[in-house]
Amino acid sequence: MASANRINQLSSHLSSNPHAAAMSSGDSAFTHVTQAPPDPILHLSHLHSEDTFEKRINVGVGAYRDENGKPWVLPVVRKAEKQLIQDPKFDHEYLPIDGLKPFYEASVRLILGKDSAAVKEKRYVGIQTISGSGAVRLGGAFLNRFRKAKIYVSNPTWGNHHDIFKDAELEVHTYPYWDPKTRGLALEDMLKSLKDAPNGSIIVLHPCAHNPTGVDPTPEQWRQIAAVLKEKSHFPFFDCAYQGFATGDLDRDASAVRYFVEQGFELLVCQSYSKNLGLYGERAGCLTVVLKSASVVPQVRSQLVRLQRAAISSPPAFGARVASLILNDETMFREWTEQLKIMSGRIQTMRKLLHDALIELKTPGTWNHITDQIGMFCYTGLSVKQVGVMKEKYHVYLTDNGRISVAGLNQSNVRTFAEALDWVVRNVN
Ligand SMILES: Cc1ncc(COP(=O)(O)O)c(C=O)c1O
Image (cartoon, rainbow, N blue to C red):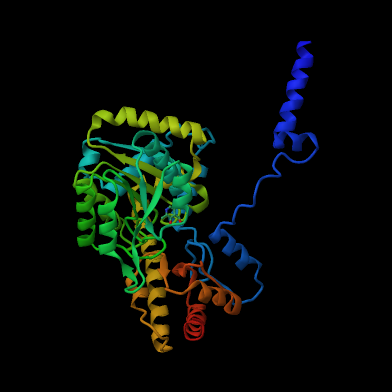
């Protein structure tokens, strides 16, 4: 009798539940799943790789390329890899949940500075993450659980910020950042929007080489931004994916974060070694929480560890081990700073060559922003329509917002790129 009831219950459940009914008829349980849009940047790389035109240009993906358009493994990274692999003690054991201690401790010193009061007073928590994206995600989860508030990202920002923070169940808003008229920072509008945001909001800031605009606040503008955040008790959330890539100087690129720490803020800062060490696929990153008091460090660490355990168990080891060797060895660290200058210097040279080519071609408009902007990206100001023509007519792949990764340019293709840009500016509205 009991089993007959159970069968009746089950069949009525099946008829009222469309997913269960689909299962019973042999269809997939996932027929109701709609197609998600492709990732715009990875999709561009795919289109570029499918294109057979010899002179195709990929300025979509934010990854460094050398003069031959090829990925560059930094010589210091090769050196550290060899040292690691030849070490008889090298193994593939799990890292602790919070990662490799010499790596995350060195990462904290790299971003805050070894003389930072927060470092000396031990009022920080560092934890290794799955690169910069993992740091942003873990930071979002931590704030969602322990300091929930509306979160404001710049308009525009790295596209993934929206998805990551939504996924972390935070309410995402934007503040103005880019002024299309000046092709620079919309400071007044930005400050007004930050003033209008509810007290205690979370504000996401790019400390250097803003993605996608390449426009960074000046030191004086950072002071004004910090003053508004203080007045409004907002919480700064720094996403630092390009330390050393903007100016070639690791300390200079960290100066906004350090200024906020000096001003006494509690804050979060995410670091990525994708670009500055070229460890893209190794997923080496760090999340640091700067606190007002060392007394809360154990509790904050324990909760970050708990969140990380539930999300990924423990972070990947190889990239962190490579980075740790470089960060903690004086000679290798010096070699790294020299190689960083090679990358940032080549990008600056490409900016100048592109600028000069456009001036020589007398391309309508002003092009100073190409050399004024900093880091890997340049916001050209091209419209979606113009971007479409760049792709179709010239086989040049850039994102719809007109952003180019300057690292995709080199001596052989910069002129072709400039000519394509010149044509669309003249002929496509
Ligand atoms: C602003 C910003 N944050 C975070 C990341 C994350 O990079 P990754 O996860 O490769 O470290 C990127 C990469 O493009 C970025 O531009």
